[in-house]
Length: 383
Image 1: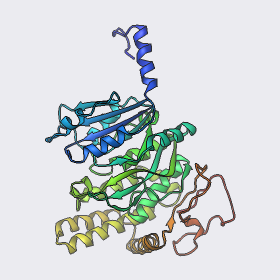
Image 2 (image 1 turned 60 degrees about the horizontal axis):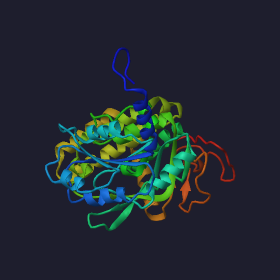
Image 3 (image 1 turned 180 degrees about the vertical axis):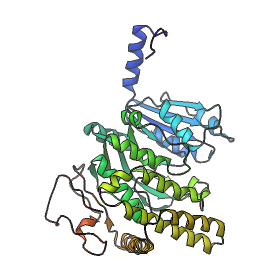
Image 4 (image 1 turned 90 degrees about the vertical axis):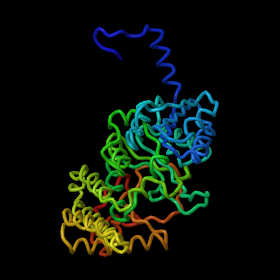
């Protein structure tokens, strides 16, 4: 609201604006830059959602193709197309999405992805039923450009509700041990607007990890919700940001940076050195891969980054072996080691196999935790 002597709207206008704001339950914001061939499937999947009070934004970041023309070709009262005056870049345009979104909940849908039917209704209902949840995600299918399913993402945690601080720890732990992000990118995530206001915006200095960084900051202001249903389709293609940044040492440097922002919490739980060793092992693994591909300059940069963070070479070797075994168990037996359990459940049954690392003695270099017969409301296994 304006302050001091600034002009303020007449009272009926204020009430009208507040009424409109309350009517918008959820915003699907589509940040767009080129990819005119992919936008229709993305936008149509958003327009197909039946959630009441839905706002759909397409925010074009100075595309050089026909994205704006295609978006304006759809006639729907829920749809608004916005063009940036200057190029903002990936996370700059994500911030524009958050700033313009009027919904109580916000989903950033990348313009090469697609929502599943009924996704928004399920996710909004789950958030409504659990007001402490600030961030919720559903698992997603990974598809190639032809639409062929090639895998899953976001199926690493049991469905349920997790205390925010425990979720931050588990996400960093899983990312460092499996060398993958357990949160299914922006398209699979629904955010509570009040938590966004408290957390701030995306860090525009980052190239890759800006989304994970914000998601973890949002979890400082609420809990994590995980649904078992598939909520989106993530398209894997050569023009993705991750593909363009292949071999860029800044990507792994950002992983260290995000971890460092939560270092106090990781030290409290006694896992900071181990997380650093796991990330250093990942860095050296990338260096070896780049060297085999003849990208020697990038390989040397990765080695230098690993050396600047490595606790000890012995710990890094152990970390590499640990990740190799865990990834093979995930690949062939679908066994996931996750350092937390939900404090509440959305569903009563989960088919996937999960093992908390505190229940395995010796192999992971840590003492055993709760026995399988023990049931607690909250668990904090040691890393």
